[in-house]
Length: 486
Image 1 (tube, rainbow, N blue to C red):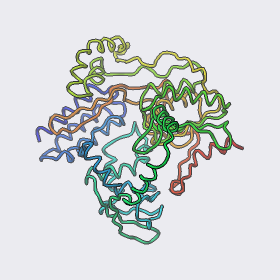
Image 2: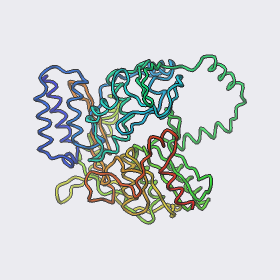
Image 3: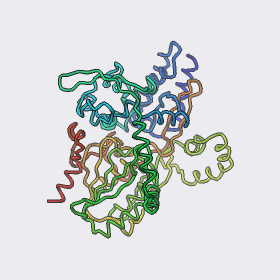
Image 4: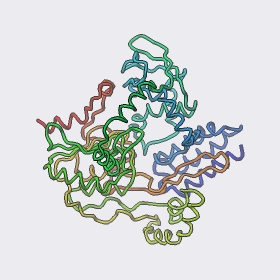
């Protein structure tokens, strides 16, 4: 018990030492009280999961989405992961789910049991009610500030994640389904494709002539666009409206992986070549990524010379150095880093300055920049939702503040005025061995709003219904297309 209380103090002190906007959404008095009160509740030994459930709500009360306690989950080796994959598709992965009005529904049935139709409500899984579990786990993490769209957008994923944390990975699940007024209990087991079909498929593929040119082209596209092996989708995709190439749609699922510079160079050259008049940037469910990419993309979207960020607040040079340099990698990697630490510290020394109020700032992306030669100068729309977070919100803030784009969808999950991210060390608590992630740099977009703790609001509010999701409709995109094809 004493050791767990020491872990509480360790967490509190690390946040004070590293987090630059600790009291932005909560007062110091309130946060100190929460940490002190937490210690008084620890009167008996706790398992890692029990301790996680006690300390996470306190960290979540800071309301900074990049900072949270990681749930204690079993880590699988590559060998174990391959073994699970070989056994077939898990009982959760055989469905697509969505929450609507506090109820969990099947939006797509990919299972071997075809009797379950899209639109069927999931009453429980192994006796656990979905809403009860997500409401509990919603206490353990936060969006940036006070918006609710991030949690709402992630409810179905959160249920599966929370269920797995509580019960580990299962090879079979007992579902209670409700369709109309009928309730039925169905067991869904881990499913492997029929071995005969699999063998036949492999034989057919083996005997098919190999198009080497096509393979090279696909490999190149994966390298440039970025490719997610899990979802088998490209990170970045450019397509044009089938009716009219004057409308282009740029879908960006994340700001990571791939050669983004080459992708944007080629994409905006193609947009210029086709004389595109309307560009739609789809940032829905884009959880963020690298700052360098969004600055680069913005240089193709801005209409004049621009400044992308205000100075980024940090607690101190030492906090930036600790977070950026010594909290990632193995012991060997850290040893190598230590050799070069004087050079890194020298760089930080030059770039971290103290203003007249005694606040330390790290200057990055704060100088005026020129737009690209092929910068798009037509009509610009941005699709957003609660899953648009972190870097997605930063670039959206500048596009919104500069009045460069029309926003369609729902409020973003990230704060309009910035987020505490940048370098985000993951620290292990000494006794419980839980891990906590802490953002250490307040990344602040050039344009700001007086509204506290909310994201970028859309100019046109559109939220897809459950029926839209079941039928695969996209009302947000359809609205834009209808506006520009009249």
